[in-house]
Length: 407
Image 1 (cartoon, one colour):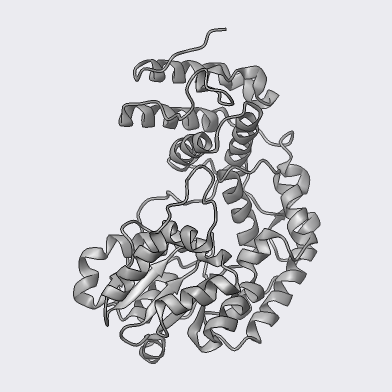
Image 2 (cartoon, rainbow, N blue to C red):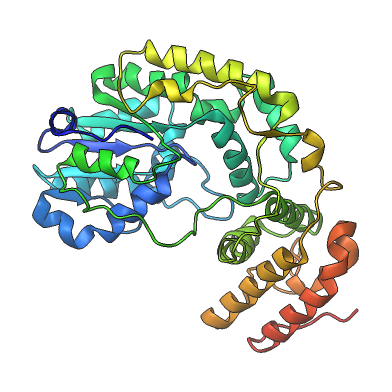
């Protein structure tokens, strides 16, 4: 567990009035906890001299607009969002401003330069780092949620084989930190070491950076960002495979997975006997070696580090591992309960919103209606539960104007 931050540490962490704290994540390093905590604390922040930028939990639209990315699968880019954010930050005057989105972690040097120029010389960048044996499995399941169809072991092999892999561009202890420090200066970068045994630690650091009284930022009582189990991730990946095969639109994938099935997964209690994603034993040595090189490189950058940097070092022999064969879908039992909970979540969303959670219309070229997907389109392991779940979905959709395809 990270050592408590004493008063002297607190004073040294405090950013000056008018500072613009840019939290760039990256993904799966406690960002959701930070964003939800600031969002819930909005009623208190103004009187405490802090402004949390944006109207939602994170400034995703502004980050996508700045980077010029197409945006998350199924979510169109909103042009002008970055300029709106800059105007909002400038209007905050001498209050400390917190801006948060993991999407900023994908910025290249020229984009970082523009961001620095737009936000001014009071900019301070904060990123978090997490143990690679925890981060890698968590990041893969996030790619699945976002639409990836790549199996875990293949994805991990690709990550370890190339420094140019997208994972390292957004997560490398060294490369990501160095990219930002090169533009804003190492004195304007703080790195927080995530403590997986103390989820409050990262909130404590943000309170001290912004001068908020202890306890202002609170952990969410929900588990809406817990990692998927291996079984749940396998079900989600197979959803993506089926959606791709049937040529569903990206927008439909977003609504079905992120706004439907994912909530069903994360709203269910996990089975203690379910397989948890971990580093396959065959990859343990490679993960340990790259992790320790990354720690050495980060330590040499001259940025401020809060937390125990040495805790990121890994020993292959002490790492929790399982054989790679555990994660092949022939080695998993694709739990019927996981499939059922995903389908029920889709139906509940349809009932709650008054419409089926679909974008595609029957007969649209290149689109496929939910009811037209059949058991034969799914992997064999899912077919046994699909008929039951399809009937559940049919009954729910019929109440909101959906139509069953009985062909």
